[in-house]
Length: 117
Image (tube, rainbow, N blue to C red):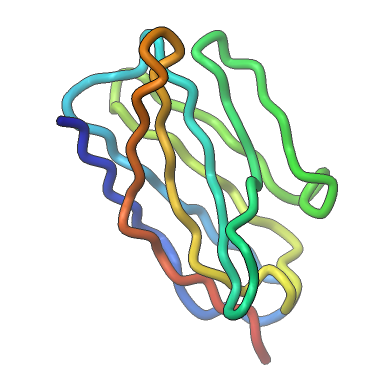
C-alpha cells in the first residue's frame, strides 16, 4: 500500500507563491509517474502537472510558466512550486502516483490552495 501525504497549501494573495509537497511512502519513485491534479468547487478534477519516472515534465496550458513540478528521490517527495497565483488557481490540489508497469495508482488526501485578497 502506498501512502501520499500533501502539505503546503494555504491562503495567499493574487501574485503570491506557494510550494506544495507530496511525501510518498514507502519509496516508490523508480517506476512511478507522479502528477498534481486540482479540483475547484463545482468543477471536474483536472491534471495540472506531471513528472515521469525519467524526470520528463508536462503542464496544463493554464499553469505553464507559473508552476514547476520537481522530485527529490532521496526524500521520496514531489513538489509543486506555484508562482504568480491567480484567483482561478483556487482549488484542492491532489498528489497522484501511477506505477508505469502495473498501472496501479494512488491518491493523496488533498491540500487546499486559496488565492484571494
